Length: 391
Image (spheres, helix red, strand yellow):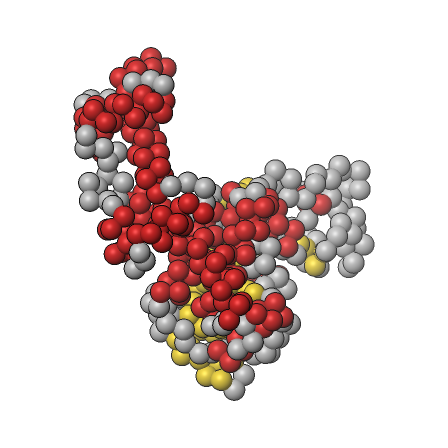
């Protein structure tokens, strides 16, 4: 079985299971540790997902309550997270029951006729549970067993539905808050595309943002600065969760929670604390990504970034300084690292050193040679020659 890890860009993680039914019930078979060999966040996702015995009964431990067989943990069947096929028949109904209803606590109801496709990539963080899915139009209907609040968005499909008595109509790209504690609450992804959610603990959210429930089924403009920041940080957190250590996951989770609080509308000391933590971290990551995208441009400067991100040049400098680096130091280091990678790249061997310098954003070749030698204790020619000899 293949289960996607934390991020949208993550590779598939292979989870082996025996095709021999009799092997499942051999008590003498040594049990491998559940989730062994996975990254920290993938292990969290592995243990968070309910598994089933081969008889079809949910099995939260190694003993099936139905057939009473003791099965090795590694041989328990983990329900598939995704589906691609005909929604009319036992295969879809089995996925709908074992994953949608029993794991996700949501019923997946196809919209329209024809084949159903749905890929789901979860990322489990300490304070927030993320799920990014993609596929054909679908209605997501709550079973009323989850007391969290859920931030919901689709970048490329309108959403419709109802949260109890509150109708829900959300434009593509905008954001809303759902209440999965309401049995029958429904959100429909009308067009083929993405459906993204972030589940937040209700009590923790209401403690810092008492008005959160007032925004259930209401539209939050995705183009607003704070919502745009939340969406970009959501993508970063989802994409890289599987690669982070526990302490790093905890920090990213707190930053995402802080951005959620600011987007929903916290006030006073709570807003200031969230702004200091979450907004600053998200802004810094956004700035770094923009710098890397513009690294080869001679126009890259504090003033250009300041105008693009609508913050003062001094604010940008302070964000980097609070992270223990300087703006100019970060830009120089990234340009040097890019130059070093290009010099080692066999495909760039015919390029002149001056061309490599320009591709890395250096337009003063003498300065490039000087700072490169200081950083790597070798000249650019030395690095290229050593890379060629090694190849």
